[in-house]
Length: 131
Image (tube, rainbow, N blue to C red; front, side):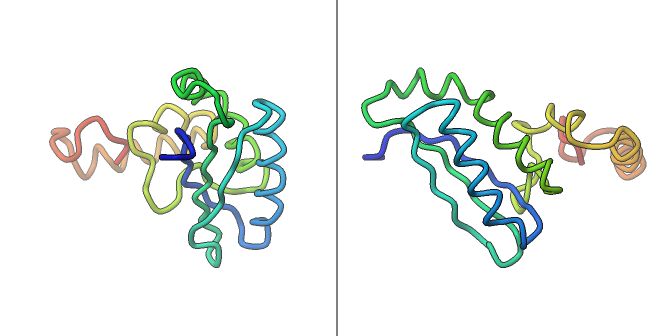
């Protein structure tokens, strides 16, 4: 908390691409918002990276958080270009659900929806979620 607010990402990329992801994502977010600080950690051995972007020192936290989607866009662009996933161990959840059409093939999305309907025809299991 002493570092201010942060925007967290749970992504995965091919293991061999982890260093490149960190390098390119760092450069992209720092171009977008000069002075941001980043922290990458996690299960790097399997390509799962927790990538946190911290507000610049002295910046207004609310103003920084208002740029959540802009920051996510540049991070997820690097992820998808490197053949990764916008969601690793923590799943898609509600925050990333609307991003799926931008990063997943329409056929894959249709298959996910069909699977959900097959397993939960009444929509009572995990309502409002992808699966």
